[in-house]
Length: 107
Image (cartoon, rainbow, N blue to C red; front, side, top):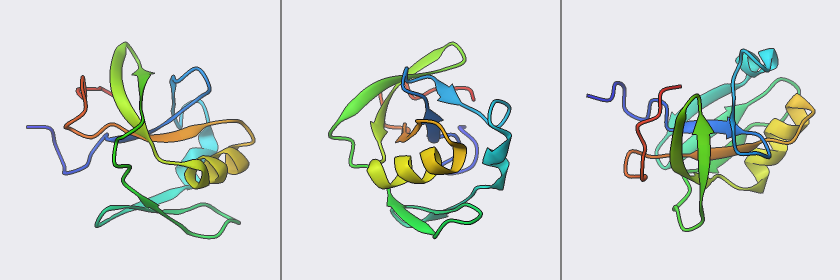
């Protein structure tokens, strides 16, 4: 009912916790994310590959995409560092799994 397994569960957010898209940051289309058991492998041009574990969800924050607000878990400093360095602005990678409160987000 929710599409492909894992679809639309990860997103980038800015310091105000609003989602960041490829429409805003065209360079995002150059980043490759491959789903792996327990997380993602991220590859960005000129940067080493990075393995990111799906966050356990202990520390959650509210994030906004379009007009939807969901509860999400931060994926950590390594992922934030990769994306922030690549884009040249502060962003965080978050995970709003299907078990998250309000996880029906339409990105």
